Image (cartoon, rainbow, N blue to C red):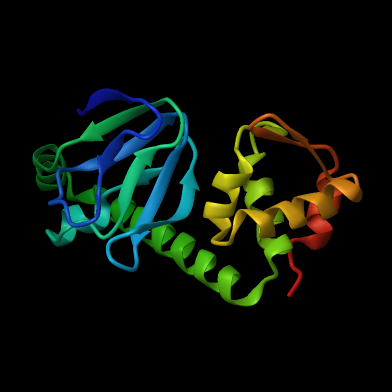
Length: 193
C-alpha cells in the first residue's frame, strides 16, 4: 500500500486549496507546514520530523487542503492514495480509531502552537522549537531565518533570543545550524511568559 516519493528542499507536496489526494507519511528529512494568511502569502507554522503523518483532515472530510506542505530538507515520503485509504477502511473498519487518533494529535499540535504564540515569550518559543528539533540530535540543521519563520517573528528578534541563550551557554551558532550545548538552559526558559 502506498508509493515512496523523494522531494528536494523547497519542493511542494501540496498547497492550501488543493483537492485531497491521500495521506503522506514522512520517513526521512523535514517538512515545512505553511498556512496562508494575508493575500495567500503562506506563514510557516510547523516543521515536521520523521514519523509525521498528514493529509487526513482533507481526505476524510473531502474538503480542500487548508495548509501547504513543502520539503524543508531532502525527504522521503510514503503517499497513500485516497482510493487505497477508502479500500483499507471498507475492508477493515477497525482502523478508524487509528485515524481518529492521528487527527486528534494533529489538532493538539495546532492548538499547542497557537497557545504558545499567544502566551509565551519569543525566547520561550525558540527554546521549545529547539528542544523539539533536537530530540534526535543536538546539532540542529536550521538557519536563523527558518527558525524565525517557525516562531513567527522577525529574524532580528530570533537573533536576540539566540544571543541570550548563547551567552547563558545553552547554544552555539554555526553555519546554517545550532548546536545545543546545555539543554537545561533551554528547559529553564521554555515556559517564560
